[in-house]
Image (cartoon, rainbow, N blue to C red):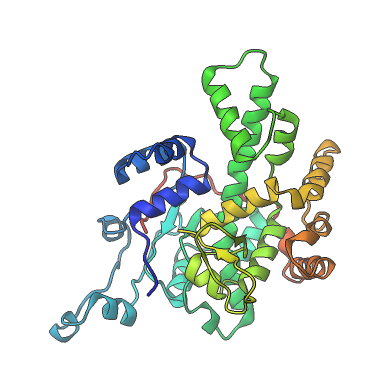
Length: 362
C-alpha cells in the first residue's frame, strides 16, 4: 500500500529541496521541530507552504466550495465516495490577481477547465500580454489523459506548469540581482555573508568562487522547461507525474522515488518524487544549474549574458544532450516540441503582480 506522507514530512521535504540550512542543522542535531516551527522557518525563507486545507478558506473564497450533500442517502456515503462522485466547483473572481495555490483535492480535469474559464485564463492572452496569473497547482488532475482533444490536453498542461516555471525563474532572478548587488559592495553585513554562504551551498560552488556562483544563478528558458516537462511527463499524464509530482523524470539512488516498471534487474535507480509540483520545478532548475553534465549549458548561457543576448531556449537545447541516453535525438525532440507548440512565445512571460498572497492549502 502506498504510504501517505504526513504534513510534517512534506514540510521537511520542502526544506531539503530548498536547502534551508536552519532546518537542516536542526535535523542533523536530531532536534525535533514541530510543524508550526517548520512553517515559521520556511515562511521566513519565503517558501510557499501547502498547509492543511481543512480551513475555512475554501468556504470563504469560493462561491460553491466542497461537495454539498442533498439527501440522506448521499450523507451516508464516505467522504471518499462523495468526493469521487462530485468534485468541488471552484469559482473565483475574474479580476483577482491574488496568488492562489490549488489544493490537493483530486480535482478532475473538468473542474480545472471551469476554473480557468472563471479566472479568464487564456493562453492566447498570455502570449499577447506576456503576463500569467499566479495560479499554482500542487498536482495534475488524475484524468487529464482522458481528454479527447490533444490540443486541449496540451493547453491544460501548459496552463498548469507555466506559472510554476515563471515563478521559480523570477525567484532565481531576484537572487541573481541580490548576489550582484552584494558582490559590488566593499563591505558586507553578517546577514549578507550568511546569505552568500547559503547560495554557495545551494548551487554547489566550492572555494567561494563568486564568478562561478553568478554563472549558476540564472534562469532556465521557459521554452526549454516546458518542452522537457512535456517530454518527461507525457504532458502531465505519466505514472511518475501523477503519483510523485515528478515532471522532469529526475533519477535518484538515495532519495524518495518511484521504481520504473521497465527498470533492468541490475539497476536500482528510482524517479525522484516530490510533495508538490513546484518542488519538482525547483529541483529541475537546480539540477541544470549545478550538475557537471550541464556545464556547456551554463557556459553558453553565461556567454549570452555577456553579449547581452536574450536567453533563448532554441539556442541552448543542443547543450542538453546529457539529459537523456538518446543524446542528440533527445535535443531534436525538444526543438520539435518547442517549435510545434510555439513555446518561445512564453519566454518573456512574467507573473501578474500579486496584491496579496493567498494560500489555498493542500
